[in-house]
Length: 262
Image (cartoon, rainbow, N blue to C red; front, side, top):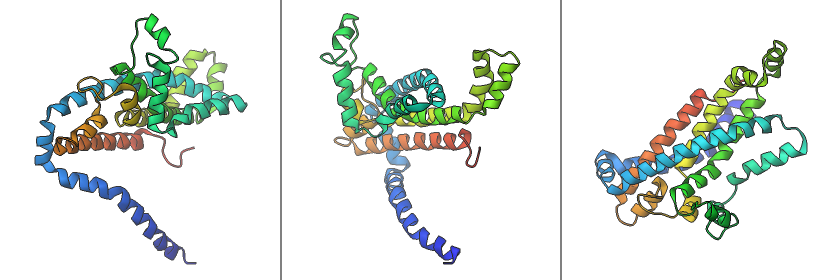
């Protein structure tokens, strides 16, 4: 069959899927408009949700990077069955229903949860506080960071590492001067995706942290609440999330691993 004919035939289902993806976004922007956006942003719900979302998501991202980078390096170098099982565990939250993730967090860190008595003895209360928001965001965002960061560490040519060690460079110096810079594009891309996922988290946060305005109500939860009272505020919040997601995806494509790169 003529390759050009095949290409044209493939465009039909492709265009249908792209229309399905793009139509809701176009509808959101068309129905919101500049005037409605300004009116929606004036709702007091918006400012509080913005502050909560950005404060908790940035803290969650810091935790994901700080704890996830060592794990990504271990996953990249761990061979055999252990490495496979660890990687499977790290990716499991991607396929978990958000409500199940939230319930699991509640059963682990809630007042009557598995670790509840220990946390209470330390004077820590997590469920239905901003700490719960951060934990929920870490849970759902970490797999996206780990996947790209692990791929970045795996893509580092070990010959550079061996040469550095031959020249007398210690493990930490080799990691910070050779391994980390070479894996940095993937790490930055993973961080951007993780932050986008943390900002968009809804189900686990609702189950584990609640929907308390000014405390645990993030942007997605505020959209859910605003639908009952002020649709314009819900649209404004949705446009903000769309704009942030678009910027983060552009950063991923700009700084992430290039297609066709070895």
